[in-house]
Length: 313
Ligand code: NAP
Image 1 (tube, rainbow, N blue to C red):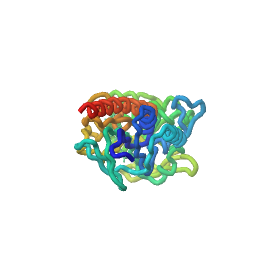
Image 2: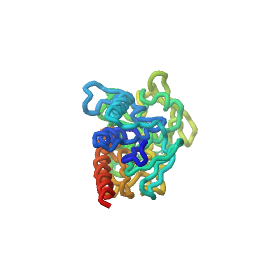
Image 3: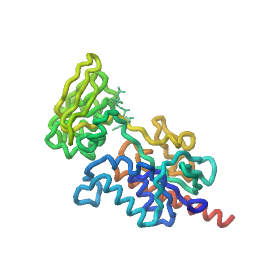
Image 4: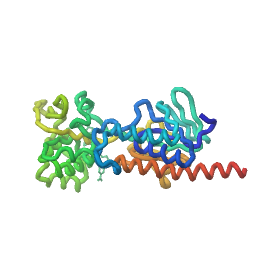
């Protein structure tokens, strides 16, 4: 590693890897910390049918592997380490990992967000085999089937409504007797004849060996449990952005997402942001990838200006 890197990328989902591809081609010789468990949410996705360029469905991990290979072929240096801390108050910036620290003229944060989980063993085991966090990605696979959606917020309503395009019946399982969702989305879901609500209920188990065959649901008021036959379970209980290491270093919004001031730039000039770590609206592989490209175009301009300034001073 050189003394001061032109660009360090943190994260390795579609945003981080696209950033690495663009940065390599821009001559920024990027160093990317991909994390010990690299790849992000796509690693838990089965077939991806909506990423342009693939006539046949591609498996989420395969898509990541192709992006990774492309970045490496173009010269990006990918390091399989977790970033444990950053210092954006000094310049050049500092990025720390368990084995050392790296100085950088610019940084792209692309650490993503994790969907909140129910924390059931069966949920994890059947992830991508009927358990999903993304109706837009996986809804198509439930044509003519019955599914359940967990959650009472805007995402749950949107996912449930979207799923009625394919599923014959969608059951929203919510832990309270009242929805958190906005009136418009709540009304839309309530008026949909394919949607029914199971109130004051929580999912205690996902049933099935190779794929989801049903769920066990507990009435939180009476404690009574019942089994429900469904082919899919969509967990829509919110997201947690991976921003813990950036707290106090860049501005975060009230939900913990990195805020963007100008284009893709964070509150710190020279620190750019891409993908789900700043975007809680679109959350698609393709939008994250596009963000990674934009962040690098901004970083390239920033670094060029810095190097020009240095040359004339
Ligand atoms: P959210 O608003 O935080 O809602 C999460 C829902 O999941 C809540 O109903 C919550 O129940 C439930 N929940 C949380 N943990 C749970 C658990 N362990 N077990 C069972 N249920 C659990 O998250 P979101 O719906 O993803 O929305 C996130 C943000 O994005 C919101 O600000 C939302 O307005 C916005 N958003 C907007 C749109 C839109 O405008 N079109 C679409 C999607 C999201 P309780 O209600 O009991 O807490």
